[in-house]
Image (cartoon, rainbow, N blue to C red):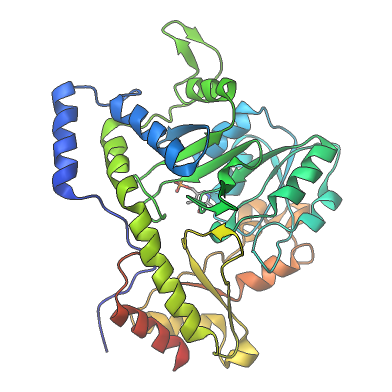
Length: 369
Ligand SMILES: *Cc1c(COP(=O)(O)O)cnc(C)c1O
């Protein structure tokens, strides 16, 4: 047995010498945090790369979710998806907002727009969808519903770095979109995140909120938080931005091989590219139909583990199954039949820019054998 462990992801790392020379600049300037030069430069370059008007970077991807809800003064109930990373729902809970779970679509694993209206009550103030695996939600339908009922839309776009539909950034949908730049994501600043904003006023407000609410030396305009990014991570982020296109291309190559090799394997479903979409290949989920495949998802998952191939069951368990949320009226499997089924079928295969042909073969052999 090949013992080299194949992990589900591997971080994109900048060139150490290049990073070192930027660190020297920081040391010389003695300006190490608080909207420094690299911080400003990273926001400018991210706007350009992502084709968005305004961006505010944060120390992680959870803070922009928390801060977006504060900035838009969201209260009451928010409609969201149970099929995501827990931070999505936690951000509501930390703001004293009641999450209302709505089922997902099998075709995207995103919130099912057809089920949103039935979940709206007089207390509903917003919708928080997730572009799960970087697959774009039906943003047009979601916006129509939001407009009809006067709701805000905050997209958790943690998976959707660089994703475009018909050459327009998916991050421009809704009122605000948030990103995560965690080490496990397509683009990382070790820990990090960002908020995508559409107008200058809101950008200003967000920048105050991420700096304790300070508008100037003596004026605090709101109960803000500390979400500021230091110069080391901003420098790291600037370097990684130069290599992210190559990383996405390498991921696309892996996805292409996976699809070719798994196309005729009975009981294995996966996603194809969507027409007009620039994908980022952040994840490669497969969905196991136990009867046809001859093995359950968990049996395959543990068999892969035995071979030192570490897939991940994203997203199992559902957020609605965790103890905090289990008691909510919307958290029942009856209300969430698709999400409940998919959570028991999914394995995300290893997916990153450094997978070799030999790695890919080992991964596929676990499934095909
Ligand atoms: C990673 C992730 C987050 C949280 O980001 P952090 O940077 O780890 O705080 C939020 N939502 C989703 C869907 C994620 O995958």
